[in-house]
Image (cartoon, rainbow, N blue to C red; front, side):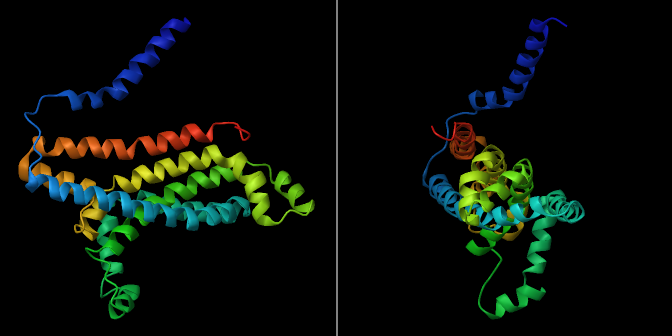
Length: 254
């Protein structure tokens, strides 16, 4: 097959893949931005950016050491852990939201104690963060396992034999070699958390994040009220992982 034919096919595929973005140019009438729309919309932007950031910090702090452990575990043990992570990813979002509501509700084992302690994991900031951690951490850990698993274990062992403490081995050897895979894993987890609708709709309808508020605006006021938040949603969801991905590909000395 001539190269120009293959390139043309790939270009057509790329255009088809990006075609949905042309919906931003469709005329839906004057965009609505009065107080009835603007106030809850701005509140949803603050909720999503602040508390998704908190969820992603938890994902990084918890998920990274777990990924390192699983990547260095024996093959059979690694397979078991990966099967658990895949199961968490395969749970349908709406089902996950219902299960979280029941498990962390007053009738659940942990929910009973949390309720007695005054911690409410339903329609609260804590519920929002916990739900986002659950929907995204599996994606991050699986990607991070692949990233760390691609590093020859001998390099880390040699660094340790030279007297380097574990934290320095990680920053000097493991992280630089795994940074591209970690960036991809983080990007997927970020977009997955920020864009989650089904599970968050069940566990944290209030405070509303951007996906839930998009639905509310659409149902209450139609597309003209959706477009301003949709633009903000895309701008916040896409550039961060895109920038992280590009930065991860820079040479270590750059």
